[in-house]
Amino acid sequence: MNEKTYKDFNEDRQLISCYNGFYTTTSGENLFIALYEHFALKGLKAEEILQVDSYDFKCRFTIKENVMGDMQDDGEEDMPEIEENSCEATATIKCVEENEQNENLPKLMYMAFKRKSGCRMVYCNFLREIMTGMKQF
Picture: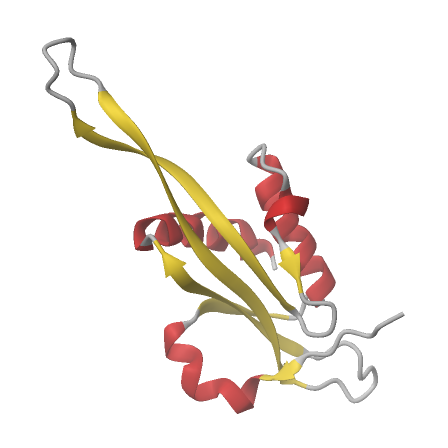
């Protein structure tokens, strides 16, 4: 079985300003399970959304959201058009402080979310929801 490894947080410290995340002592597996549950509880097929890297604690996913579009003036009742916006994002877990007693589970980690492409509003809505849900970690 392949062992997952945490990348060192200090190597990417200069990139942290573009990430949105939090410090945690919870294992990477549990954090990804919580992310999986976030999508599943919304009625989405999380196994089709999340693409987890089998070597590093990183996953890619697409977030889709329906938004109301402009009103159509076609002479009938004004009904807004529903549009689907999406964005590509990643979740990465980095080692901040190593654990001398257990090298497979760091003492302190940082879970970061980053928008790769797509609609910023969809990403901001996702980030607001997920950060509220991840407070327990």
